[in-house]
Length: 612
Image (cartoon, rainbow, N blue to C red; front, side, top):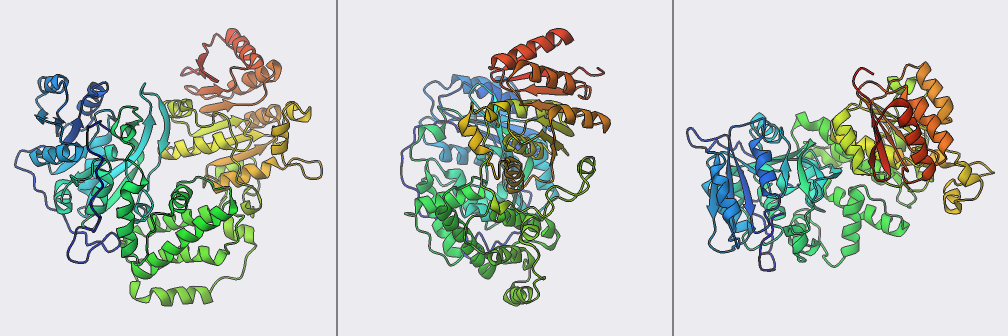
């Protein structure tokens, strides 16, 4: 993300790197030797900088403050107008090495020069405006040391703004297969979250110096024929969305810059990539990221596009994983199946989904792949009800069993309900902040509507690696505002049938569609009754989120009823603080309890002290 004054030249054609027939889907990973010098650090952290030094000290501090301390930090200034801030770093710590370019030569050239000077066997990348979490380097080094065939590792990231406020966690493809599959559509790594073996980097030929912006994307293309890759699920880098960064300041950073990569990879699968079909490519990429496509025709086209590529992957390159990774591969394919099945309104038939599942079943048995497909097709189980076959989620767990005799997702068919995850402030940074601090095992949400906030919290819990369940309390009947017609557009969202709202089923469909049914437990009742039920079941949540009424009395009642349930050290997040009734209720409750309101725009937080 560092800024550089680089020419907007077109990238050189992506033709692969290996002359021995290897490719992205026919990798020949070998054990990569340790090439570090005797007495050298375990890893070299490489950082490039140019002109914008607003976040440089924070980035450097995040490296120096690592739990793992066996490293050197190489900072190279790419011909800045005033390189003094970079020069001054050398005096801060003996592990910091400063390199200076006399002129601005570009990020790729600078990074290649720095890595050539590196002494460590492992190269860790960090941009000068991003932040490493304290455990980051140690976990990346540990992952590489644990697997001799692994040469490239990244992680999920937390997106932050220029003020350092967290906005959301970006979950990345975790397994080697998922990464190679993702490269067919978009970048499977955040550059500033990666580390790689120097030997793998050298085998790839380093960064392409004729690519001024997307050099990281091209590096993954060049490196993957030589080694295996993975992303850690935990967000280990805070990635800054910087208005003056390389990504933001170069209009040439667009999908067309990496079209040559997709052309080459698709060719490896026997497919022809058409860079002019921008909408189709974008739709397929967004669909795999979890973005819903509302127009049925575009969704059908995107699904057909993806399934066609799976067919070719199965036929051309099935042997992509080692036997001990079968579980990870199965999970990858299961996610694809759930993504295809969720909210289905298209005309694509379920037998095409079975092709995706068969991909995982034929991993490692390329010679009999087609025979296996035919056998599986002939031995298909008797047709179960479509809902059971497509959903395949909702096994009972102890939290669900507190309120349900049968999982509410059992036999539920999401395909008949629209893809409509409507919400307001559902991805507010306050969720990530509070969940990172409290690390909840149990969350209670009061007022779930269509599930947007619950889904976001479930995803945050997964990214933070929390074993967390979310109990969603709502009648799903709407509020007095809906009944009185004060919000006509909201009343329409209730989807009345024979005078009864169907919102609950939209909620269930959204949860299944998002793949978080194993974390979310609906409790269909009024907030008053639910509080009594939770108390009777001895439920003590670590986090409570109240997004219910806007009138003072019911909001106050919810605060009073649910605060009593909160576990010591927990937190209560309230919503709609801008509404007069909500604000009065919060201030009244805080005055009575001696609590301080931590106001965050439309959200507010009440913190529970340890031992209360």
